[in-house]
Length: 299
Image (cartoon, rainbow, N blue to C red):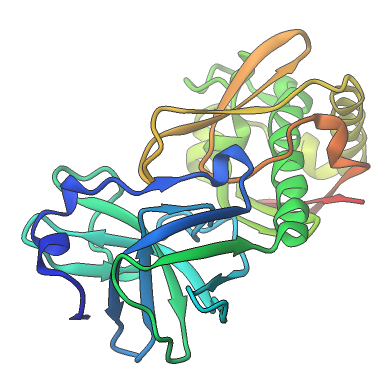
């Protein structure tokens, strides 16, 4: 990665704490440019002091990056081809997306949102730009993501009777947390979240009985959807509790389910009321006795 921005930014990145606002629901910000770098592929990666853009997480890329553009001081719009995590090491080396060699919150590392532009753009340091997120796309992604946070605890509730013993991990409602113990991958697209679970030897040793689920899949699907519908129709509010405004700050999805306040760690974007999600349906599939796929769709 070739550095074409100010030396001060890379030598002292910890002194700059760009603010992210996507967790507040923002889709528009104006901010000076803090740094510009050119990737090995020739794209420009722009870092601003403030941004509403949600980047794709390099460790758990369940929610995709926001779409949108940056408008320069002359009013020209530059479409973003990607929005990613950028990491700066303690010695000033610059890494983008999956090339970041450490986990988030590693000591002395700094993290920023990288706005990727394929085309050439006449942008300069400290220039004020307008960052504009595609609000329609963001909202549909947020609906699907919030629906997935109802599906997870509803799944745990439906499968509660299939545990022969306590596995040692409970969810925010105090139910054995199959969702987090078995999750293998999660992918969110517009109005759809697809979660894949692995029910292997380790989960069975923890006490989970897979045969009743495998033999009665539609029964458990109905239980999950009944719970999701009840929770959604209660119309509770949703808020994101953030421990800070930096990209690496911890954030939590907060709502009320069955009269209990719940918090789920989450770095994504969400609706503000459960009623905003619309109709939700979770469809279960087990191609084999060790794999559970749940497609949670909204409309």
